Each structure stands twice: as C-alpha cells, then as structure tokens.
Length: 108
Image 1: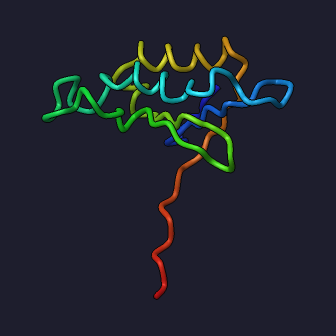
Image 2: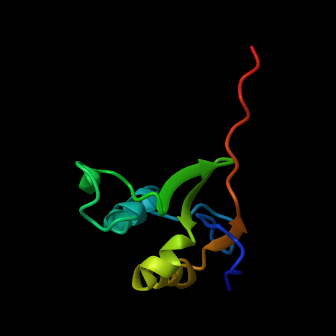
C-alpha cells in the first residue's frame, strides 16, 4: 500500500529471488506506455508524444533499473495509476516509497 504522504513510488526491477527483472528494457517499455498520462493531458506541449511523462520515468539507481512513479498520477489518472501498480504486483517487483532529491551543486 502506498502512503498518501509519499510523493514518489520506486518500482525496482528486482525479482523475489534477487535477480534483475527481464526483459532488460522493461522500465523503458513501461514508461513508454505511460507517456500519454501527464499533467495537462496527452496533448500537453509540442512533442509531448515522444517524451516520457514526468509522472512515470525510467531510471537506474544503484545499478538497478527502476521506474519512478509520481503520486500525482493517482489523483489525476487513477486508471493509469492502477495499471502501473498492478504491473508491479503481478510481476512481484519491489516497491519503495521515497522522494528523489536533486543532486547537490558541484563545488568548484
């Protein structure tokens, strides 16, 4: 269950036996399917159809492929939210609630 105070949910590409989830491009595929769900709707901005949604972004954290899902999707696009959470559950992927912090400025 995702707490209402968390801003981001990290779907981690780790199976219950500790192996990387396959296929290796699963995070990009999932985020690509979700790219139409974004603030302002699918037609928000020029070229919006060729970019990931800010609500569902693939990344690598500590060598593990992840998808960061912003909880605003839950309120604005509940069916999309349910789809992403069901994907994680159906594939027994690990979930972590967190807030991704920006990198500190480079001292120079």
